[in-house]
Image 1 (cartoon, rainbow, N blue to C red):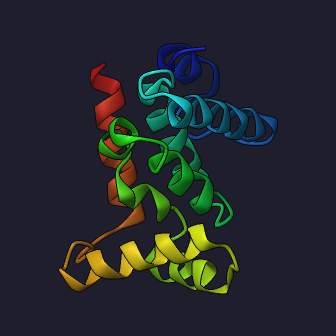
Image 2 (cartoon, one colour; image 1 turned 45 degrees about the horizontal axis):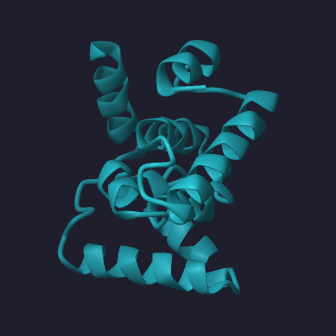
Length: 138
């Protein structure tokens, strides 16, 4: 499945079983990318992250972070804001409570960016609308 097929099949705001399929696609392509740069479809990975962002499930923040960390192209393709589908404060609290090193790394990155003002004026709704426009133009 590529990003165009995923967009047709699930849309930007999937629900239910579609979210599970998207999570699995993201895991699969992140693992491919982690194994060898260029093996994962980073455009599909980005779309999966947008779809998960739009679902607003806090548990997806680590999945998005792990995909972002799969390789250089993934990190360039997947905006760090896509971790924040449930909002910045809730996401930081969720990551702080999680025992994994990946959660600590994600939280550290978010705090560093926040200290530079990167998230000033951030709005989940406005960020989502930006991706609505992005994918409508494709």
